[in-house]
Length: 170
Image 1 (cartoon, rainbow, N blue to C red):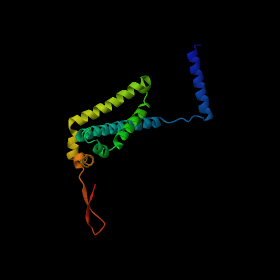
Image 2: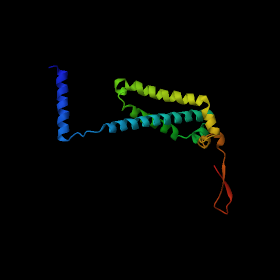
Image 3: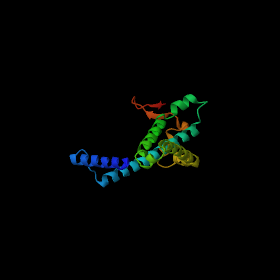
Image 4: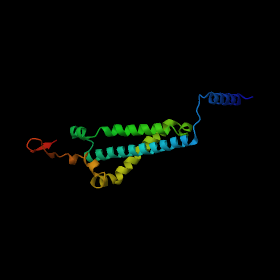
């Protein structure tokens, strides 16, 4: 008997024995379908989040400039949590990609590289398409975009606690 068939029979016997002893629990088909569905939703969600955050970083750099002349202001204004959150979303997407069987058949490093490059490319395309300007001027994203733009960094006037006097917040 060839060695491959013998190893397969040994594996089958081991698995059957473990099932009979109660060491392995059988799971219904819906369990794996639900797991795949949630993994797919998570992958799509993390990809879209990473795309949006990377796109937003491109928009901020383009709007505020790279910051060579105004490096101090750019360092203060730039929301540093965005790159970290974008990297976290890419990392989560990579972890979810590992769950799919096609990732085992191919070189996983190439899959990761293609995933990251596609996110950066799609974010760049979204930035160049002008959608950011539309979102920053109207719609539900207006408030989110305007709080990070340099030209919107004017002091706010609020009423203070002392005799309801007005003061400036910087």
